Image 1: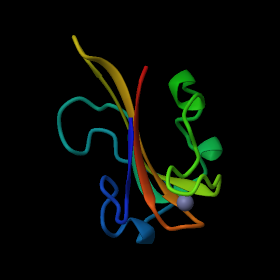
Image 2 (image 1 turned 120 degrees about the vertical axis):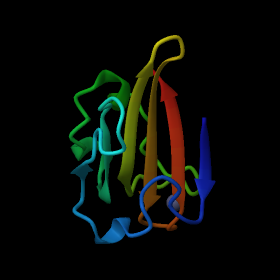
Image 3 (image 1 turned 90 degrees about the vertical axis):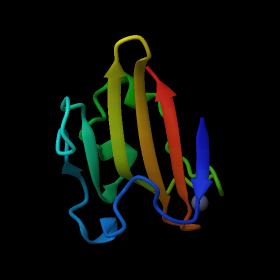
Length: 105
Ligand SMILES: [Zn+2]
């Protein structure tokens, strides 16, 4: 499940001014599920990378197919009854589009 946008949807509007990858787990209150945002790191270099579900994600831009993407937002959640979801936002360095993609673990 994915969608392409012209502007960031999940990362904050000032994401480009942030550190490449900031751990913001639990900052919104509630349970501290893994959550990261920032100006972006390649998927292969993301700190959540050792997780099996993340290793199997698509790291290509869904607009142009480029591999030159940066992960600017990641959220992993586990809810009783609904299972586990991994949501990523990728910024394409070639066409500039944003891909938001959700995976079931
Ligand atoms: Zn692209």
